[in-house]
Image (cartoon, rainbow, N blue to C red; front, side, top):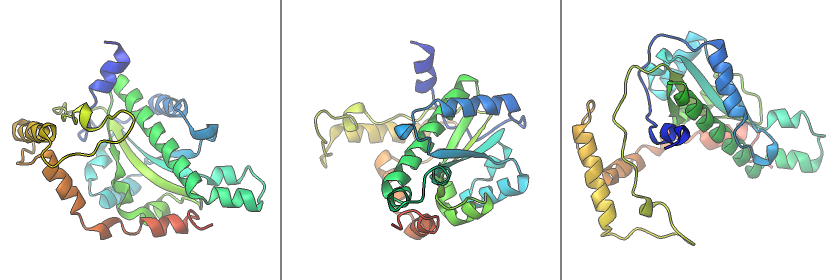
Length: 248
């Protein structure tokens, strides 16, 4: 197996880090990896903010509910960014409509997400570990204020990365025939044997892993996720509109 596939196939989320901070060169290397990721129409519709201020990291810990991020070697916030492009185009009716559109919002989200995965993979190739954190959206408006984000930008993901002190068991993924289809979508049936078998695999994984054992299947996990209070992130649409998206 080639080393790239080895890196990709061995991915694990890391939440425990040594006190060692990433060097300036390491951060620059990770940003370079992000810059070489695919970007929609070569418009490079994202920015990256390194959060190094302990007070701001503590606020992000409050927002996400995961104060362990403060101990990471480095913390990035990945930002969908049409503000920079706004500075480059004449303010016509067409350009203004496009910059505020769902299409360009999604393009910025895609660019930021793809760049995030590039940083994760590059980091793992350097023996770093990381966790991608969508939990910054628990209070998007507060993140926007914390990082002084201008209109036409939006925080998409956080990324805690550093030198790991753990090597957790790898979570088994869905069987491919439950998520990879040919020529059209294939819906699950109520008595899908492959899903039942996967539920058992996940149950066994949670029972046997080294920490945080629990009695749960994949199906139970999804039910739990979908049962969360929807008000926790009800402010996302309002925050997007306050940032100038979805308003034209």
